[in-house]
Figure (cartoon, rainbow, N blue to C red):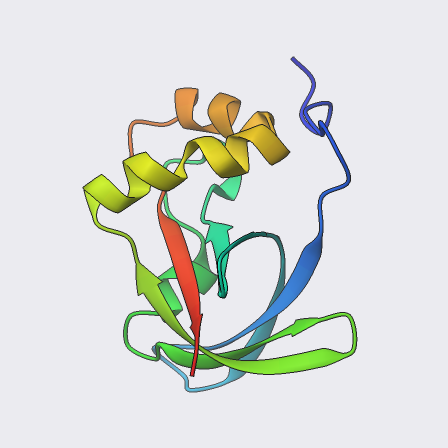
Length: 119
């Protein structure tokens, strides 16, 4: 399977601001997302690499951040899902982007699902 071939429908992207847990420097990561009620859901796939992406590692020490969708910049709190919540949500991003299932098959780590809640 070719990565990127798994788009089943238009997949929206956002910009996630995150602060480095080491340097305190601010960064921005473009990510695919889906919505769940008032929340925004992102997946830390890192294309199935063995390690979680840096943006994901920066969120637990600095969960209050901002996202930008189009021209709309919103304050959010990042919450890593529990295993039960991840199991409930996982089919939704896979439905939007089938390659997430491929990424999961390429790594032994459980790919984190993050809820970005409005604050």
